[in-house]
Image (cartoon, rainbow over all chains, first blue to last red; front, side, top):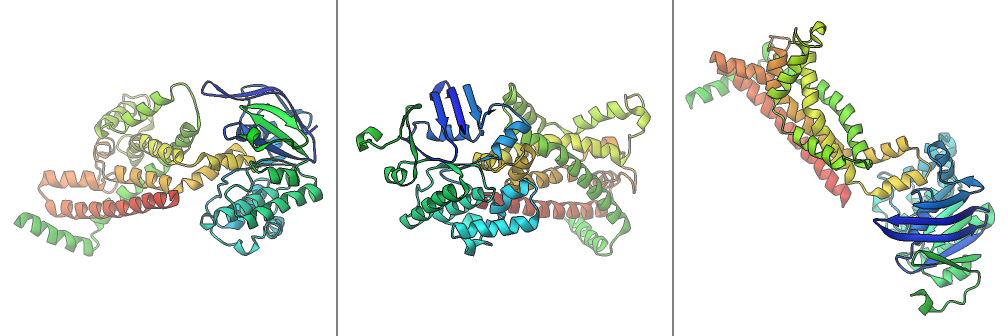
Length: 228
Length: 234
């Protein structure tokens, strides 16, 4: 099992954002995380990315305790990467952003350069190699953020609304990339999304969040009303 | 008015003639101010980062204390350090009094709160997504801190420049701890005070012009860095 969580909660200023009795996520699958605004999708993704600790409960990753600290936490975080709904790019050129994850891992420059070009070609952004990262459009920024995440070849890719605020053409590009990395690299993907059609296209499983609680369905019998 | 105009005229002549005494005084000022700014930055910037990124009990009180220290008069700091490094002080045996090191110690104490509070402000403005992005891409805490400092570089640069501007123009610490020894601890501000006492206005005016020119240059730099902070924010 990739993730297993038991009685996982997250509170913020006295309010319970997330309250999961049990959660199990398999390796090498694509999960679509669906829920209304404020359902707790982003909070769950941040927990799974080990960016925030839970308020209570247990979270295991690949059989390891996901709630340790220090070097162990760093090791876990280096196997999982989260791409934000509104990703932020570091000041500087695109290539510097994409190589960041490789650089912090001490990967040699020659290998970094090769990998950066490879992933930029994968997301169709090779012409923006030297471009100022802060001058990109929303769709371009998302693709660069995705390239930045893919450069480090994570075991798990967490995406928060990967196609939100992106035009149809870019949406298709992004979804195709996710499909491809799951098939070729066996990367596990958990993506929060509002788009049912995308879930149908990509996901092996659906995770439905309602007011911070989980109900899981494999098949989609959801009416639009039930997503409100 | 004649006095001022005559003094101005003579001061410019002194300046363009590259008067040795003038340049020696300016050199001492720049040296001690630069060293104290460097030391204060090495202390204040990491402290500012830690305070900005930590949650702890008493954080508000600490910030209040830091803001209070910004208003500490230079003569109070001078007196405090004097009590430690004078012959009867705890560190009297180190014979630091009336040396450049003593001025540096006093000036560091003066500007560490300034650098720290401005660094806190600069780092706090940085979007938290930078932190999370660096961490999720596998950065260690130190690597993440470096990312934040890079993103806040203009604000931090403005903090360093403001600190330098503060120390190069102060007189209390330099006078009390430096002793105004010619060619050794005589800074622009202490020299101006001395020349005024002697009734010799030419050198005082020349030093005043130099100090104002440096202060103007510092302010230009400060506003440049502040402006870049706003541009980056947009």
